[in-house]
Length: 115
Image 1 (tube, rainbow, N blue to C red):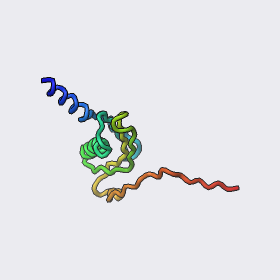
Image 2: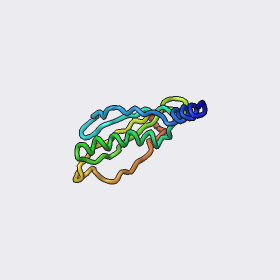
Image 3: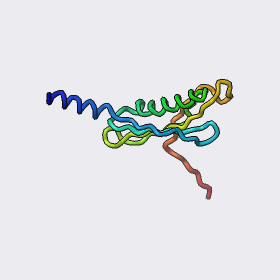
Image 4: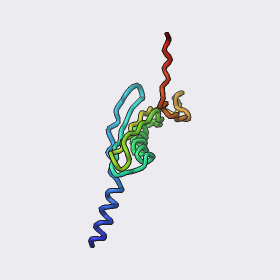
């Protein structure tokens, strides 16, 4: 019995728990949603929670979700992991509805100052 309890407790801790925020408008056809996960999921799984919610939101409007930006924070196993995504809900015929080419945000900024 004790062995089953320990196995259940370990499985519960590693399965994690996700909290997804409400979708928030941030501009014309543009929104953001966040997710916080405890329990050590990988970043793909963490982002997938937010992307799924965003897609459901857009489908509810009869539109398509286009991811425009994502950020992640936290350390797996040490702190809660969170992801925030920004997205647009666009109709099939919207000129901005096209293939997404994700680019990593630069982590270094070079500033050139004049004399």
